[in-house]
Amino acid sequence: LYNIIFTLDYEIHGNGEGDPLELLIEPTDRMLDLFDQYGARLTIMADVAEILKFKQYKDENGFDKFHYDLITKQLKRAVETGHDVQLHLHSSFYNALYSDGCWRQDYSEYDLANLNPERLESIIRDGKKYLEELLQDADKTYKCIAFRAANWSMQPSKNIVTALVNNRIKIDTSVFKFGKRKGLVSFDYSDANNEIISWKASSEDICKKDENGELLEIPIYCEKRSVMAFISLNRFYRVLMSSRHKLGKNEIQDYSEKKLNSIRSNLINKLSIPFRKHAWKMDFNQCSGRQLINALKRIEKKYAGYEKDISVVLIGHSKLFNKINEISLIPFLKYLNNNKLKHSSSIFKNTINIQK
Ligand SMILES: [Zn+2]
Image (cartoon, rainbow, N blue to C red; front, side, top):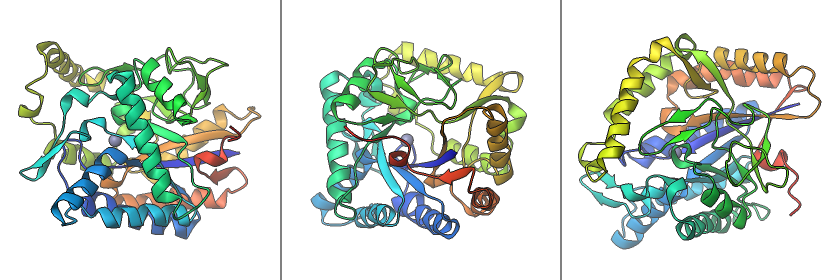
């Protein structure tokens, strides 16, 4: 059986711009309606760092500008109706200040994995506690057990893995094999243990398997593919959107020349994009339904003789869920529905045995 896990990063634009009503609440409501219609389940990876900022703004100003109440209502609706909410953290939001229509983030805390152990321990503890207090209200059995790092920042792994384990987070779902970044956040997941089969992660390196590891890495499914495989209508939409909301020069001016140089060389790398193969994630807000079905068929072919259940983690972003995407996702949801013996739309707690 293939456990299909739709994970949705639930956050405003990376540069701190945007209205949660438009980027979180409205698209996620539509998505939950659609998933309900087809019996699929969604896992909302809620960026608790920014949600806490929206709450703070409301408490301090007596005005719910960022629709905090609607956010909590939506997250409760999700767990009440069989969907799931798990932890995502953009650490740079904790010290963010709101001015001129934008959350000015603390870029010294942008790279999650590089925060010191005490800081990591405390923000993960607070994030988990926040979700559990909020959502046990809606479902007494709710537990926060899974995590995704901001910008997939899981290297160096030791501090972040230790902090997750200490806070009884069972699953990380940040790694995607073949992924590689250099810049404000740097990682290299080319040596990840597997592109789809989960592994007990070593606290020395999230990519490595350690039978005694206490954190299960369930990677975001990824393939190495040529640039042609990336073409879909919604990718153009995403590129357009991120060029409108990119990090400003002023915001990173405090960064050392070394970091800026690495960003520049990253840009140069990007110029050679058409000639190389790239990490292609199963992104349900950017790929068409047909592309998703074909990926699932490739997985089934490759793992035809595999005896255990396999979790297939897809990734999406609520801010990208527009009407085009909604229509193009339907064939995939129908496909899962018509092949129920082979696929179940699942959530993390159903994929592991949570005894501890
Ligand atoms: Zn994110």
